[in-house]
Amino acid sequence: MQERFEVPDVSCEHCKSAIEGALRPLAGVQSALVDVDGKTTIVDYDENVIDRGAIAAVIEEEGYPVST
Image (cartoon, rainbow, N blue to C red; front, side, top):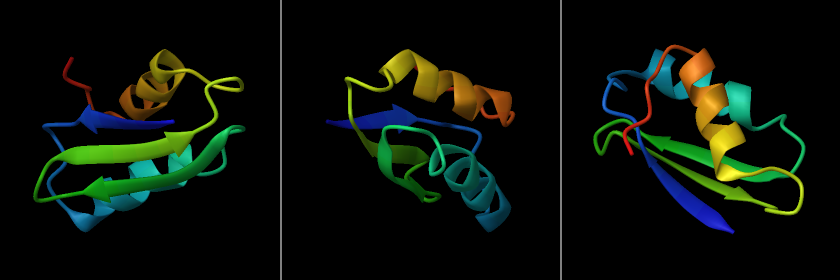
């Protein structure tokens, strides 16, 4: 499954690196790509292993609120 997360506080390569680095090792996450200009994060994941809420929580733990 692929989900798009709106992350309005993303503004630089450090933000991108922090979010991608936190998401990629998670069980069930196949890929995570942050678009700094678009202020979004696209995550491909196995919904049988991890859900949207858990992914959003990890992004927010890194200090980047997710818009709903």
